[in-house]
Image (tube, rainbow, N blue to C red):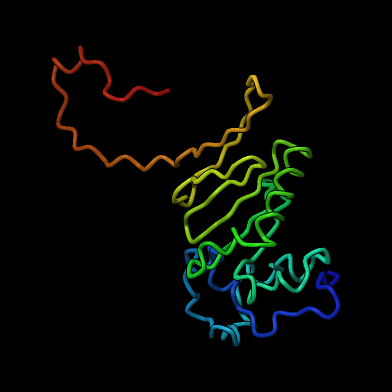
Length: 200
């Protein structure tokens, strides 16, 4: 596999992805330092790091359009771009600098990406993650989605308004498993009862 890193760029002195990203294999939530990271220095299990860490390259390393101001150790933002089943551009923000994404030049670039995403396709979305809290960036506004749990799905849609097409977003929450019910022995009277659970 060809090295995607732009010549002259490296992770030197930057370990922010080890804090802001979720690492499923280690059960590490976003916004907290990985227990295997020495912040600003190194990953202590680098040779045996999980696959999700092994294949990840932030956009600062691979996108020549992002200049030195976008180095995560400076911006406090890690930009990732998913291109598989979920097409999204995500700004993962250091929770100690939760407003970093609203600063120049980052906010205007997020808005530019949002305009591009709307023009490109309705299945591309621009997200900001501050820990487990997420925001959707639209060209005309930002939507606070609150805390997104693992398994939740972000769904966008559009509707026509007098001013034109309006984009909407909602979170489809993963249903919590229902606790098991202790049902006693059936009696003749139970046969006349409707089921308690309706299947939709």
